Image 1 (cartoon, helix red, strand yellow):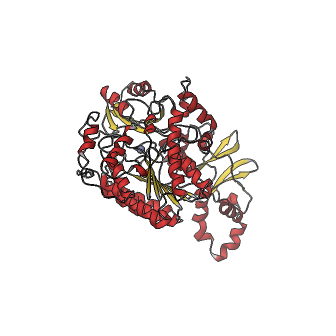
Image 2: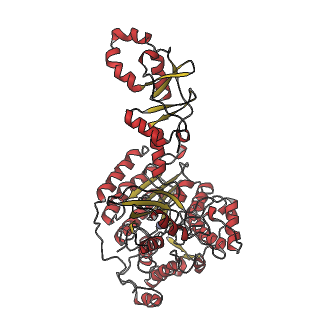
Image 3: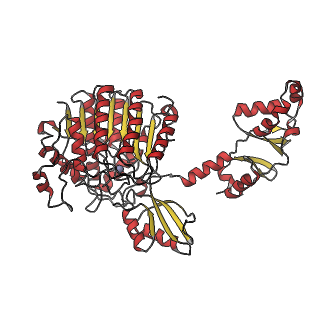
Length: 210
Length: 375
Ligand SMILES: [Zn+2]
């Protein structure tokens, strides 16, 4: 999955010469937390609600109100911003956000701002990957972490004519093993479990009935 | 007459095959047990008619109905996109007719209650809650529940509370009425992370005007009577009372029983009796007794289904069953049951849950109630 697949293409921006008050109002009106800042049509920086909050106690005292209204976005924004490319893999973009502890990445292509990727987009992506998109049952098998085992379990499922909706393969708690967690499009995975067990694999789910 | 029982021997035609887990013989086992125990009388039985195509199309797409008909008449085609001809829902002769009869029976039950002919009506062949608009799923071809609720809405203008106690999430009904504030769907089921179909999380609350009118209580695998009853009592009376329905439709699948081969819940007759009594009483308190009860899952057709559904009927007909099943009944079915038929009507073993699920279920219910703003 690429950044282009999950980013938002409707981006609310401000300009370097806009007042900070205007930026604050925009964040509140649009109910967003990140504002890419443009200088002409070039991306110059990023302004977040956190930048505004962090400066508040110092700046927002009464004698400073006047100064605040004169302050420009370009004086407060983070620059240069950390950006992503639409063809970056989602996992790389997520790593950037995690490592730099930031909540969003403006997406830039050939110098132009084409979208924005926020932590909400990443979480939605995770929910969809881990979640269940179509009626299906869970089948969890532990296999040795060597070539061929995913294929042999998958071919059992194929032989039953059952569709695989998703599969994730996290490392197992057991050293040298891997978990295969399938969602398979059947209400009754008992026979598939039996056939997989017959191949010598340990089926963790569904459990045996007493 | 207080309660009616919809029944036909032709329900046996809804059959996917010899080895298939959905076995309609359970309906005969249940009905004969009720009769032999002196709990069900001929004058209480109503014969169903197949539902018309016009009624089916209030829920299902014309194209889907057409495909079900053609497959049932022997036409060969790949209908897996419609969920048919699959491992779960194989094609069988005259499947359109068999499916329509189940829907017709639910329509009969809904109409009899809505028109005040009886207070309660039961169709244990119904409860096929997984069928979608244009897709068969989980042994369900036509969704008799959705068609019945559609009729109650359009023709009788009733606000409908649908309660689904099957071990599996009542997905087909939920999605059909997801944006409708006049149909409340409430499903208690094994958490979809572990059991088919996977949906039914507490965050599925409805959409648009229907937001808040889909309610889901996903319970942990191995949940036992004590914890399940606690969840039921914490959610069902409260949600139904504040919804103030004109009629209650109850799906009483019994596959959450500890002996059922398809789920991983650990209920006994105690939980099912409790739920039947509670909803029965709620129907009298909230909507003048108007209650339609449908079947659903239940895959231990000899040891579990006849007992649980007999206890259900006894509750609705205000009759008190004897503790034991009659010897005549056991003798009648001895030849085909792989195990000896049960002697006691109620479960005597009560499996205690070995895993600490009560705490997780409590948290689930607390989070759910937090998000139900209209209560
Ligand atoms: Zn079920």
